[in-house]
Length: 188
Length: 228
Image 1: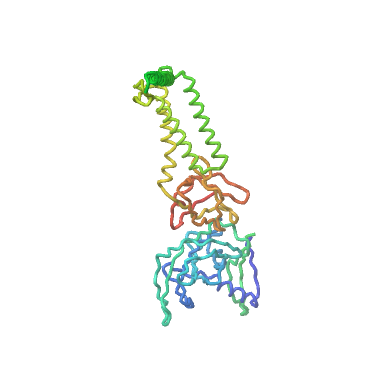
Image 2: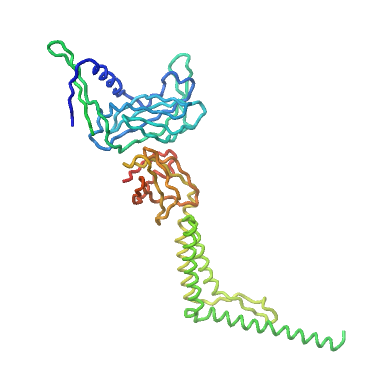
């Protein structure tokens, strides 16, 4: 099942760099508010999403690293961005920020994408009465309101059906030629 | 007024006085027959029991045929049982006229009939048991169900809700999103709070299982239940 592919530097270096960049699991802090700039005076709703494959062999960091989760809101007046993720008890917990017009207390269904898998989910309960005033941390940007949505659980998910980059190592041989060792796992 | 006219008038009064007396006698004999010592073997008693039982069955069939809510079915059943119990109790009381001049003057008589009394007590017990659930549900007020039903079903799944007796508490199959989440679904006090839930996965409907308390009346919808 495990296949090792040896490739020369060229284009694979570029691909590997891209994969490592996207696969980074950034340390996350649930208490940290969504303070990305560019919210343009909008309120922010923090959306935690828990993702877990059903089979334990896939509940590992190198599988989760390649999922590159995204959240896509289907309404034009919302924006969203990923904020961070962590692995917790065999599941991947990702955080997204949805920026909404102040006073608007309704969020439509949205789509989350993990790897090659699209999942349409209904918004969870948001306690609109409990808001936190959050400083933008930047001069000239006013503080904004932060709301927290109940965690979305995507559990007992079927095995991934796409090739997963397990590792990539850049080596240099005795002649000074750079070689990229890429280990790809094909679960299908 | 002439003497002959007075005489005619007097005889008319006497004639009219006789009729109520005869009527009183007949009603008294009916009352005795109904509430007498032989009540247990009385065909009327058996007939009332039969009519009562068949009425309850008919009410049940009627409410099922017209898809009445289980709450109202139980409530109607309890009311019918109470009505029959009251009939049995009431039949032990009889109005007895004490004035030969008027049938409307008299007192309320009571004759104890053991079998009727026992039947009434049993029916009251059935009433107390059957009215318990509707009353409890009504006192609890409106309710909501929501949360995440974890299964391997994935897309196009829904859940059905059932009461303790295996009757649907809602007509519709409540749609889950791709993650198995059921958005808040509110129901009125006259719909039974569900005791069981079953997953419908495409064309396949699973066996109902007890619903977790965390899925009910949870304003945050943070409950989670595994459904196989």
